Amino acid sequence: MSSILSSPPNAVAFDGNLALESTDHGLAITNKLLRDQRGEICRLLVARRIHFPNQPENVIRDQREHFKIQAEAFGDQDPMRSRWFLSRSRCGFFNDIQRLDRELARLHAMKREYEDSFGARPDSINASLRPHPRSLSAQHLPDDVLFIIFELLEGRSGESRTGRADIISARLVCRRFCNVASHFLVREISIGLDEASLARMEEISHHPTIARGVRTIRITLRFYNSSFTDFQSFAFHQIRRARDYLYFLRRDAEYRTPDGTSPAALQERNEAHAHVVKLQRLAGMDLAGEGVSADKRDLAVLLDIHREYIALLEGQMSMLKRKRLSHCLGSAMARMPRARSLVIRDANPQLPLRDRYQRPESDLWTSLRISALEPLDGFDVLWALDMPSYGCILDIFATIRNAGVYLTSIDIWLRNMRSSETLVPSQEMRQDLSEGMRLLKSFNFRADYFPNDEAMNNVREFLSTSLSTARLQQLSLAINIEAIDPASLDLGGILYSVSGPHLKEITLSGLGIDFPTLLQFMGRLPEMIRRLHLSDVYLLSDTWREALDVLRAKTYGDVKFEWPEGGEFESTSEDDLESIFGDIGQDSAENAELYITRALHRNPLEDL
Image 1 (cartoon, rainbow, N blue to C red):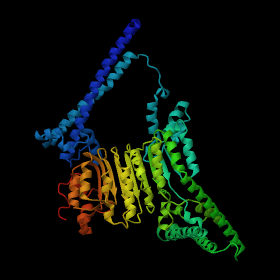
Image 2: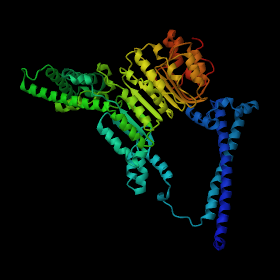
Image 3: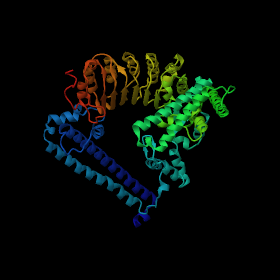
Image 4: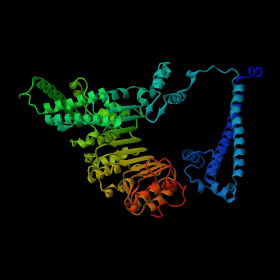
């Protein structure tokens, strides 16, 4: 210590630099040795599970863990085709499990030795350069470290926000914590075709800190219906909703809960029945005609509610005509640098079924006003109502692109395709739409109701334009195929536009594909695919036996292959299908999945 104090400042700095340089060099060498040891251990673990899968001592317990270790050891390369694997196989290394285990034990011992050396070097240099270390606290941590800490505190799991209360509490600690934690305060903004939600988004987007933490914009498209400008149509719609709720109560009492026979449940059904009878009586009345004075007062209230509905309808139509939603969204996303994920729904799937019906409370008109003035969503598709245009979706994409924003994730779920022609982009818009998708990494599209083949053709045009991007990593397409000719489900026009060098997660459900298209599409995909889920896929040409051979050419982490159609399955019995693909809901991988993942050597469809 005295020698350091008596040395000139330059000499102390020089000695410190030498010590830091020496330590840094030693740490780099040790770190490289550690990486090499970890890689060799992972390769041996993968080889042990492949050659000796039934050994109870296997460290790798399931397919997911096997895929994770395999990716660390071999990357996207097939292990069986790697130079390391071939050279070890030629020398008979994998013939003796005891030899393999001895090599693993030796590598683990060397790894522990390197880890001890790696941890001791920083302590020695800190002791020589900083004999009097400062007392540090969380306030001395850099912002990058605090961001990591608050991400863990946030506790994100899927779309849940379990740690939001902790984030709010952390903002009260000090000004610096408040500034950093504010980035996690609002992760998702929900908007609709109403001024209140747009005003909230505008307010958040102008906040200097909170706006930087927003990741996702969720849009729910619920429309007021133009067919209800006529009072009779409006009244009969309320009667039908009241009947639906009464049917729900009766079914609940008959099939579901023991509470259905309780006095409270019986009273609720009686009130719902009285509600239906009263609305039917009012719908057939004339305010100027004869009738009970109490019913006339109730009819006047119902007419007032109808006038309020028309006012809301006119306001929404004006908003759509001015493209208020798309313009507000484009400008807000331009101010939120990390909001690059868009979720679009035409219904709220989380809303309980019971709450979708007209539910009478103690005051009939209070409950009716709340229910009647709500806009309709995609669940109303079976009611044969006039459906609004989905052209606002194209307006949203065009406005976002004009604002200089490039989306990285799009998730669309539409319950109703009766107005699918409004999703077809014009020739002028196609190029702008494709350009706006060039940074897209994740695309999910689901549609639950197609009235005819023309609706499918319209959706195909929309998807072909949206998926012309080379950066796509995750693709999910799910279609409800009821009442549609399988030949109209051909995915060729869609998959031909998908460039697949980075596409590693694929989910296809309810769609058709011919064998040449499948062969070409799989040929453009990388060697390693993390997830492949095929459900209710219709093969339009050739056979599924050949299709399984094409799918088998890749390496997978997770595979699901359920209920294929077309090909040789047109004449296959249900018993044969069950022997190949298993029962619905069975967790274990069946023969087709085992064959695709190379766990089964014989094609299970050879005998069909």
